[in-house]
Image 1 (cartoon, rainbow, N blue to C red):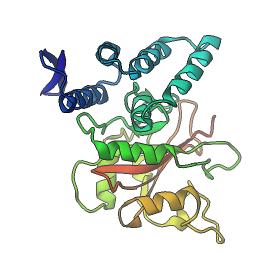
Image 2: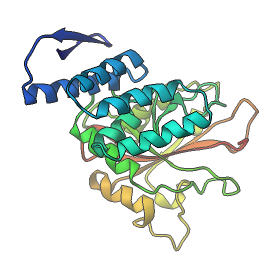
Image 3: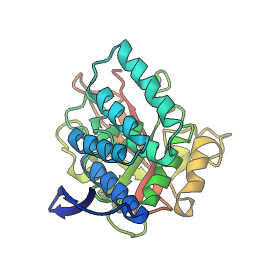
Length: 285
């Protein structure tokens, strides 16, 4: 049994066909499953079908997929911690790029900041992404390379609101075209203009710029070098070393404060994507 994917609008349809065990065909079908999961990361039935398909071919990744599905349905408990440990041990013996994909963009997208009423950003595993500009059929080797890069950078914590602890998360979202990055392109990719001005996001005060010295995610004091640390690693990775900084002030349901969404992003060298770092600083933590 081999699976073929077709698309009808935004819906991904999986159709079955009879075939032999040609290695190239099996590889293509494996990719087809991953593309379908990327477009529908919350579809547990699709993932279990994928696990069955892997098991029929004696592929050890089958148990990893099944345990992931079970873990996502568990209530937080001692059993969850045990299952997470088992999953980590399984993953250490599998293709790291595949494991990274299944542990990030193949996971259901959850709102990043549950205390804002109109949060446009979400989290898939450790990856932060735009809820308005996800990947759908954008699976390719370049996407896997971006994920591998992002999850291996020691991001640290944001220097914004230094009295609190706000970890930096890797960020990834789709870029609609290959135009040169400008403030307008960044705003469009993050869909800033569509955020409700009257709700939580003060988009009129949103600041998009390229000046490292005045950004508030990474340490930019006079003796700090922008080519060092996680910032330097990201700067060397993106196209032309060009990074854009986004400051989006917000207020939470508790009222106004110094809460903000911060991003540091650039164009991926591996495809039409923004890659970088994300931090949500909630003054009401």
